Length: 268
Image (cartoon, rainbow, N blue to C red; front, side):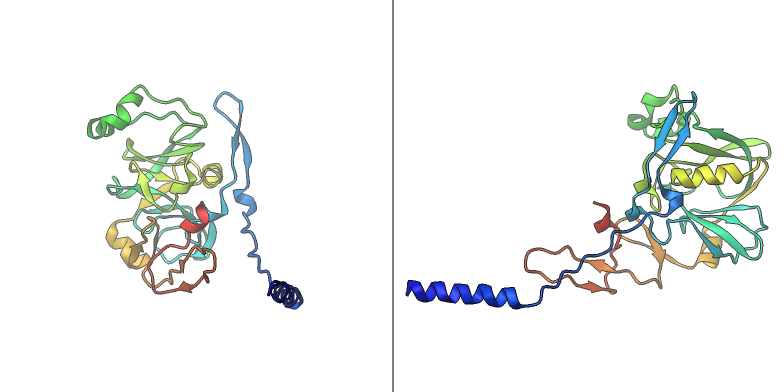
C-alpha cells in the first residue's frame, strides 16, 4: 500500500508539472510626471521634499486633466465646486483644467464670487476664532499660529479669496494629507494635492476672479452626485466597481451593482 501511495503521489506531481502554468500579474499603476516627487524651497530657503502622490489617490475625478467646460465663466476664472469636489481653471475654446479637491465637512463657508488678493508660499496658519470656539480640543493649542513648513495644514501654497476688499478666510491651498483629496475632510477651505496647488499658484495672478458654486449651480452643471462609503463622490450614472480581496482558494469577482469605491483596496 505504501508503494502504491508513493506511485500515485509521483504521478500527481508529474501531471502537475506537465500542465500549463498561467500567472497573471496586474501591471503596477503609474504616477503621471506632474505628480512625481519634487523638491521645493521652503520658507527659510531650506529644501523641502514633496513626495509623489500615490497612484491609488489619483482617481479619475481626482487627477488633473483637461476637460470640456460647460459653465458660463470667462477664461481665466477659477471655479470651485464644493459639491462635485472639483476645481476648474477655465481656459479658452470651451475647455478647463480640472483638479480634484477636498472640501469642508459642514458646508462651504462661502458662496459666490471673489478675487485672489493674496498669494503665499509655505504660508503660516492660524485657526479662526470660530474654529477654536466650536472645536477647542482640536484648535486651541494652535491659537498662536503655526509657521509655514512641511507640517503646516495649508501645505506648500495658498491663494486667499477676498470680497469687496475684505478677507473671506476662504483659501485654496495645499495639504500634507493627499489621501483627503476628493473627500469632505477639511475645516472649510479647498485643499489640493501639493503638486496641483504649486502649478496653479504659479499661473494665477493677483486679481484673478474666483467663483464658488451654490448647490443649485452644481446640480445644474455637474448633475447629481452620490457619496461612496469611502467618502468620494461620483456622478449617479457612473459605474462603481466593487472589488473583493482574495483569500486562499477564492475567485476574485467584480460587479457594477454595489456602491463601493474601487479606490480603498488600492490605498493600503
